[in-house]
Image 1: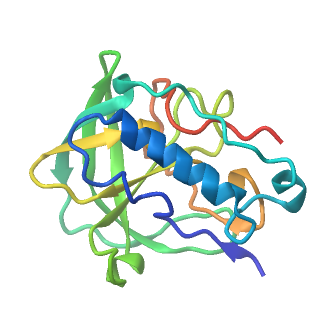
Image 2: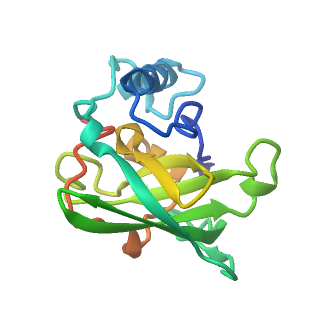
Length: 198
């Protein structure tokens, strides 16, 4: 049976920041490395886990902590998001995030998992998948994810330093959402987790 990849694994620190906090990113990286080193939780294959030391990250940079204008999309209908397996979880587009990097206008759609939103503690959890010009070069070709939480007002913070790979980057047995085409950024996001070198 294919294993199912659940989101929001590393979201403890990613939700409520409204300003750049280097220590939060350092803690995020520490949590990830501990998770991946733990044989009971790690998605790594046994042969990779046996030699695992730490994940490789881009240098922490305040440049990739961006302030975005949030536009709520209403009356969106749930849709089946494609995954790397036949699994088709229901998501709904929650809104759009508009921001700039290097003077280039960017837009990302942010989604809510219909099933997870009904679970205790996940009511405000959102899913932000993306690809960029580093995808398939320095970062995982299938794109990366960021965990967000619903923020107040129409100015939201996104910390790309806390972008992580789907489990499929480490083990094809997992079922991971495929980044929608509309979330392909025409810029380099040199932040977060790099591609896993096997």
